[in-house]
Length: 433
Image (cartoon, rainbow, N blue to C red; front, side, top):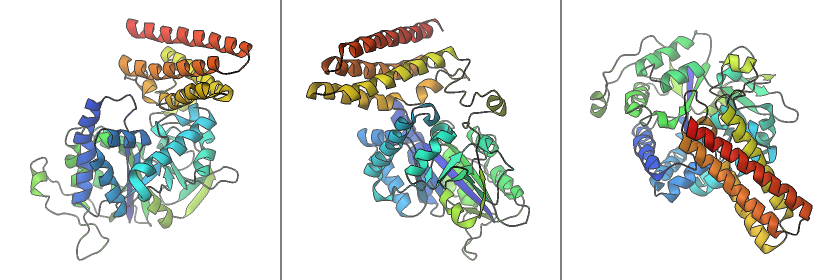
């Protein structure tokens, strides 16, 4: 048997516009849920970051949330944990990472209800380092998924390795990067995908493969890909009525799908079963204890060799990234100091506002849009910087209203000035680029 475990990553940044959110919901989220409604045998693992759950509720897309909840109640999907505002967890302080994971749990439980019981963890952008294992395990996640490039041993297809970490037992799954990217960039169709899966089976026991990609791939990034790919694959893999659990080799597609693509019979033979990632834990034995490489799902082998583990978010050779992280580090320090010094109702009010603004200011997109590999969007960069600046504003106001020593206030005023200088440098760079 070949076990296929697909993962769909649902996320929009806190700076996203209502117009784009509506477009994505109509082009991707609702159509994906419709595919699962049409094919009750379809299974998948869903990651939805709490910031998106919140936005969907705020802007009236509660049908998307209720649709996900319904699929989870039916056992078609499971949810994963993550960081609420999609931060690059290895690059932020440990206490901030722990906070983001807890915020994500609480927010998603509020919007998705009791069905939100994640066993696994999806680190934003699959950015992994050893530093995130402890907070992931402490939040009671049994497994974590990383990019295939993180795998330091022979490619696992029939065993599940665990992370070599003291006093913690966390399984690690690796995404098939090549196959996932083929789907994401429309380099494979439904029959070609199924043929690829069948070729993985060598007739010597069960194997598994995991694909993972942005949910927005289906319909938003690639028009009609929800039907042209997902529906075609799930339709082809519908279990035969006379052979429970077995996948049929051919079945006519629904009429509405015929108009969008020509059906091709999958080549080769072999039985394919669709499962959630957590179900793999019950099927395959444990392997060895390993140390995955620090990486992301956009990291290459050359990046790892150069120690440039997260190139789209903190490239050593990107001056904007350098300034962005300098500014964010300063912002985090100021907010923490404000919370430490707040000692009266007014200073507590501003410190709390700074804390609540810092949470979304950690989101990853501001760095991704500054990567120039090939993405660049000055407005998304500026919006992220503005969130950070707002956090600094409220943090310093809290300090000035607190009873902390004048020397502390003076020191942190100099940091405000330094932050203003970095902000202006980035803004000048945006003007000139």
